[in-house]
Image 1 (cartoon, rainbow, N blue to C red):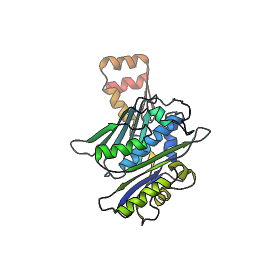
Image 2 (tube, rainbow, N blue to C red):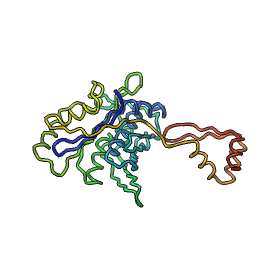
Image 3 (spheres, one colour):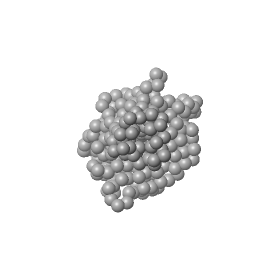
Amino acid sequence: MKDQLVRATAEGVRIFAATTTDLVADAARRHDCYPIAAAALGRTITGALLFAANLKNEEAVTIKIAGDGPLGRLVADAVPKGFARGFVDNPHVDLPSNAKGKLDVAGGVGRNGVVSVTRFTGLEHDVSGSCELVSGEIAEDLTNYLFVSEQTPSSVGLGVLVDTDLSVRAAGGFMVQPLPDVSDAVLDRLEQNLKSMRSVTEMIDGGLDARGIISTVFDGLDVNFLSETPLAFRCQCSRERVESTLISLNAKDRQSLIDDGHAEVVCQFCGEKYQFSGDELKRLFER
């Protein structure tokens, strides 16, 4: 099953659904995530992709979740073209299972903190908002953010299933939002569907793709599929950007790197390592 994001509408309701198993597995591998960190980071990255789904091509979104749990910050960037990246401050957090026998993501994130969202529109001022965490489960926190900060009633579902060998077995999510002209009957049907449906990871692990998730959420409604976008983990870092950062250092720090005879710069978002020898540093700073 390929990672993809599908957009659709049904009788006055719109939905974005995504399968992100490979993308989340890539992120977890890059950051050497333990299961709780993989689940939390995967949910955040998937959420960012869903938030970016209705942006214009050159726009972008960043979601930051900063709770009081041991994971620290969770940060994810996404663009409408289907590319996303992210990191977690402390990927090696290990906690006992929660009361339901599942990964204690809320315990890792913490229940006290802030979720903030910035939409980069390309205009003079970016659009930012924030609100307090309500559960630390991330999906509920993003649902609450949309209602409190953007006055947009929504239902967000997110999930990451980590297998016994610590690999990411299934990941994805959906975001459904009623439009102004939706009828009460459609809302009632939608509410029933959301209450009775399986979890996101159960649906994906059971073989449903993004279209299948949408068909489940919109069961009994007339669905209009609009578009599909392939998804991938992709970072904007490059050797040229790292060189620009090194050049911006003050003279003392530059000389310190030359004296060390080597420099290694690691991208916080993707874990890519950029190596520079002493001679390369000399040539770079001279240029």
